[in-house]
Image (cartoon, rainbow, N blue to C red; front, side, top):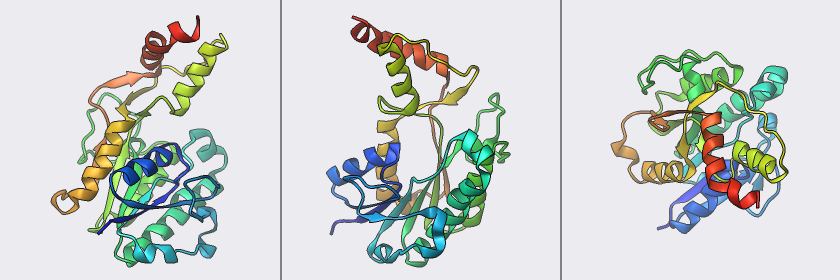
Length: 241
């Protein structure tokens, strides 16, 4: 029997790659999003949790929560809206999914650890979020950390040809514009393909993975400048011909 998966945030950067990936691997996927696309099966607005219809979760085996406002500037300057979505709406959704016996995969962030990049983080490292975004992710983790059907994937920078920074930098190369790169900003970069495989393995081996928290990140800190160098060496010759 085909496992049924609901992806909340199916039109996010990760959601748009995860949907076809899971379908290709034999999962029946239902996409939930605030916006319309080929992946959207039901509209959902996490900022209005009191009016969300979640009847579609009754038949789901898994619920993947990929929706969030991740922009640090928005989390600082539009705190109330971001809190409604990232904490209140997300927590309501997860509670309802768990109540229906769904297994929930929540995309969290290594921002829950804080800004000390000199420490090699593990799942047992105490959290100490500094940013509002990290604090919001941490609140959701703490709310459901003891639930056996809840697992949080702490993501670092997810690298792909389609990620926001890569697309921005490629655009600058193509238009021969000077890119604005924040430095120093180091992250434990992971490729999108590795993240997709991690989600698949987690669903296949749910019972054997005891921890409710899984770090999904690379083993090397890479700065935005390093990423720019990689993109330069790979794409600049073609774009600048």
